[in-house]
Image 1 (cartoon, rainbow, N blue to C red):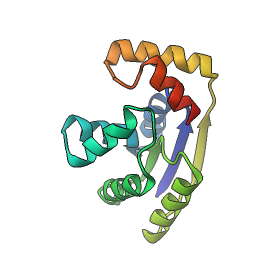
Image 2: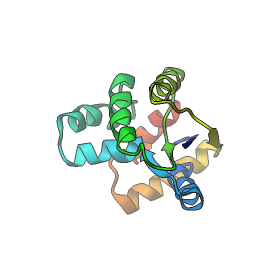
Image 3: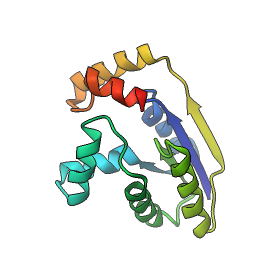
Image 4: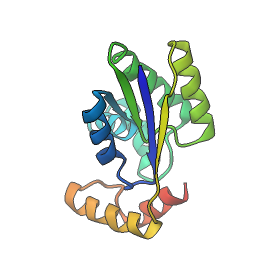
Length: 148
C-alpha cells in the first residue's frame, strides 16, 4: 500500500492537491474534515460532539479521530493506498496513526507539506465560506484555527 499524508493550514489546498495525487496514483481519500462534516450533517452523536469543537475552531479529541480513521481505513484495505488529508495535525496524532497503521501491517510512505501565508489563508477561507456556506469559515474561527 502507498500511504501519503498531506498537511497544511486550513485553506492551503489539501483537498485540491489530494485530488491530483489520487488521480495519478489511484489512491483512496480519507479527509477527516469530510468525515466529520458528514457526521455533523447527519446529526449523529459523533457529529454533535465534533461540532461542539469545530464550531469554536478547536481540534476534535485525538482518540475520537483515531477510532473514526481506523474504521474508515479498514474499509479501504484492498486499495492501492490512502491519502490522509488533514491528519495528523499533532505529534500525538502522528504517533497514534503510526501505531494504527503498524497494527495493520502498513505505514506512511510520504508526507506532503503545503505552506501558505496566513494572510492568504484568511482570504481563501472567507471566500470559501461565501461559496460553500461553511459555518467555520468566518474571521473569528479562522483565526482560532490558524492559532491551533
